[in-house]
Image (cartoon, rainbow over the protein chains, first blue to last red):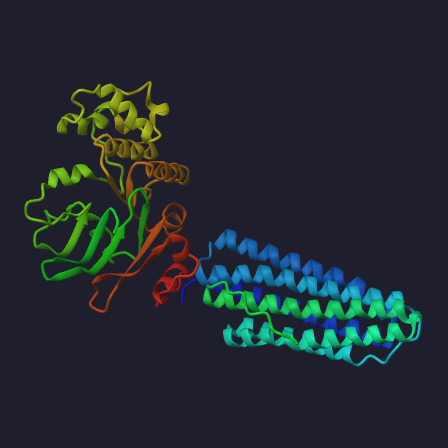
Length: 222
Length: 255
């Protein structure tokens, strides 16, 4: 009933988080696609586009701080705004990982890929799917979903481990592959970090709903 | 158990129950804030602590209020003695139409508590404690009503302090004050907790959040009687209250 303007502003900020989330998700997915296709123009566009994501993150922070200063939110509202600030940072960092992957695309250049990329796209798909559903859980205030998504990080960690071992095997078989294989492990590492940050977002969601800061159990991968 | 232990306090005006089954422990030398909508019994509760409600016809208290173990409502309780220990500051500053000095000296003179000590020294001490001395030291014999509202309120606090109470009750002490004067009273409350226990009723939730250690949220039950819906550490009440009614109230969403 009361506080229509505040409610309206808060909902708009939640929508902005979803928009930033969509940008980060698309950057991560796109980065692995450009790698697979060795598409330099798109890689460059991705690196350039990171600026927009940074700007959006600052805009969200600014609006959240303005809302705190002008509306003095309390309790659940305050926690939601605190979560928005944290989530915006996490999303912006995820986009930085995507930018890092785009840089790897340029570093590898026209050199033929040492192997067809299968698991890296799978890792990216999984991380993006987790991110998508985590933001849905934020919007619907679904604490159980947030806890469950956090656990799925184990699957991404397992893929990371698998890719890492596979690339080591390539290096042992052919020392000329060291350069590219190392760079591909960076890509895998970045994707693993994306999923970790989804886990952080899940923890913030649980806190914003329950008011209890709980470190969700680290998922056991292997 | 705290400085004041209230157990199952029910307070009625005639047949109307204003407060129902309220239990609170007021902690010594800390600030306890009472918040809630108008008419939910906060002020009634505050006035039960020094029996300021006694004079209202038909007023009746059930349950117990104990201060340092002493039963406040026991038939033998000396109410004057009680109010000496439990002073009160009201919503509108209410200095006597006398000089600044006489206002502060009033209590010690009436109660004879300054015997053996210099009244001058006592007045200065109280004005210093109320953070007013520097502003009035050269005009002690001027009319108290010439002071600004914020200064008058601090004078009223000095007047309470001069009687050397243990507990100070404050009923909306800043509602007539501008933001700067409010801030000074809030700062003063913090320093007063070195010696005194404070209970404050405030409509300003943010004031409660700023100044208090403990917060009690009063609400109305189905019979329109005031109840204590939630009580807890201030930092928890304003970040993650347990009761949905508290959450709705402090986030500005009622019903």
